[in-house]
Image (cartoon, rainbow, N blue to C red; front, side, top):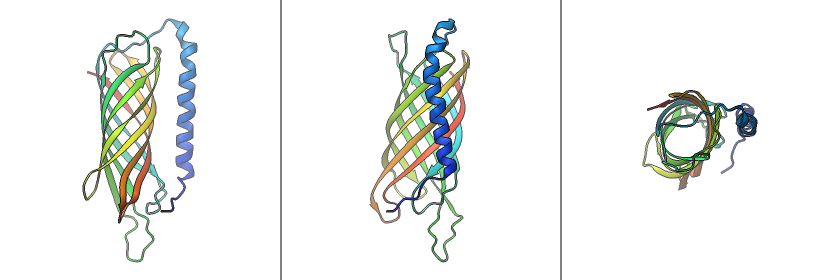
Length: 202
């Protein structure tokens, strides 16, 4: 199936986030000598995120829609005092899209959605306020109608620690859903989402 190009706005969002992520990685060296360290002292965190969903499927429009995520983060009891620190996460997300088939009689303004449930491994770097991370893992994806499908996600992000119990998080993820030549969806469905939210230490 022929894919559309992701909208220019979507490209700019992803490019901007990548620049910020790389800057946060490089800043770890600068901040390391300040003596100001923010180390994780608790093993359980809860993240609430919202953001923007983008896709380039040929039957969807090129606009940006919304997503909402709840993420449970469990830090593995890692004996090393220095990063990277491995963490397990369970992510549940709602991702909205909109049809754009261009057929007579079709309501092209009608939205549809996918739910994603992803257990992932996350690696968190840095002992300063800025903590970049990368994550990847398999997942189950549930359409508005029909059975769940298998897929995977990969992403990166940055946590900004404000206190011992609270952080702000931004991130971007790529999702791939395997569909095996579905009569409606085709062989796969892919999408990006950019998100931001809060992280609470429990």
